[in-house]
Length: 174
Image (cartoon, rainbow, N blue to C red; front, top):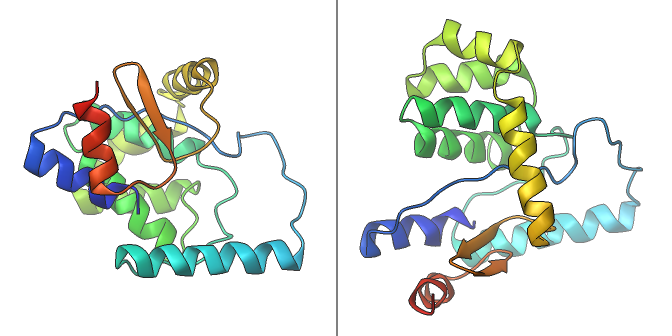
């Protein structure tokens, strides 16, 4: 949902986007189970945002972590397929209800967008980009970022899903 207005901004305003990694649930940190009421509110929130942004989104409780997916994004960036990779991950997470921390799922998605399967597998299995992901996360923590999506332009930023107009204001007031 955060990517729809961002993609529009890139297209219409020729804005350059630099993706940074941020783990909502860092690998190795287990989150206590949520109450039924919490899950129902969260599902309702996803449904509301889905309607608001005209997207087909579903609740996904399969992906507990995202570090592998974030590492895959770093590989895709090097190969010039970063935007395509993010699109594929968002569809897998929010529409196809897949586990985006599962290596086989990621390798299949990578292959679908044109990444070399063996190179991608090797990068994921060896954790080649893990330090890059951890560095991005540390930078976000130092900036006070606590959620996603988060948009930063110059020395200003906004967290949460934003409209096209609010993103335009963010870059115009930079």
